[in-house]
Image (cartoon, rainbow, N blue to C red; front, top):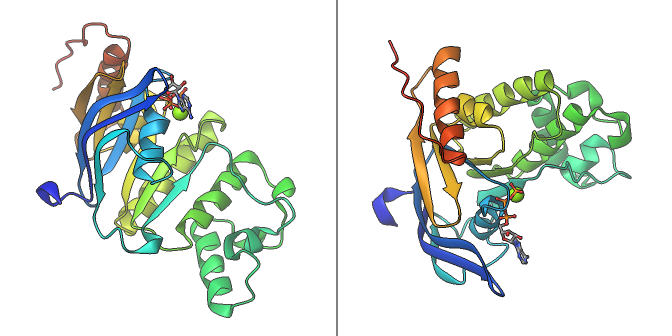
Length: 241
Ligand SMILES: Nc1ncnc2c1ncn2[C@@H]1O[C@H](COP(=O)(O)OP(=O)(O)OP(=O)(O)O)[C@@H](O)[C@H]1O
Ligand SMILES: [Mg+2]
């Protein structure tokens, strides 16, 4: 592995017929890091996530994952919850397994996402935010080391979204997960991430390191700068105190 990274992306290109979705992307993600990927629609964010998850192969270039022999290493969570409508919340987590350990683990995770009382509910009895929390708990069932999140909060209202952001941050920190969050929302990226990567025109990208324990003002400044980069305006020159 390069630089002791958890995920090392080296000169990755991805083409579909004549279309270049990713051009020469190189990126190293450290163990325990929370990285946000933002950028214009069609900029290749989901493509990069699918390549990291091993769902597709790069056309050229290389992606290395530390400990990739561990089956449970990586989980993806998508914008839509992808729950099975005919299974209860508990069964969605344990896939109907009657194994006591699996069921207990599922119950612990439901507690963690504050849905301990909803084990016997069915997905259609849940709100959008609750479904996403079940999806998050399900993603955590195999004790992943890497969590890949492709706009998991996109469909939620602002308040629920904010609560989910805190919940995810909390869990990622507690479980020391390496996390990549794809989001359209620069504020969300600025609130949550240690580092923001802006994917631009599938050719170059811009990086922003976020201060630790940032306050609302700093979040706003980072979000403005990142948005400026996405829109390819000149970054705002705001001085922090
Ligand atoms: N399976 C595919 N076949 C052909 N073209 C594809 C395929 N998947 C993605 N693309 C193309 O690759 C480019 C990048 O798509 P991708 O879904 O990665 O963008 P994105 O940054 O996730 O966009 P969004 O923010 O809208 O989700 C797009 O031009 C898209 O049309
Ligand atoms: Mg996408």
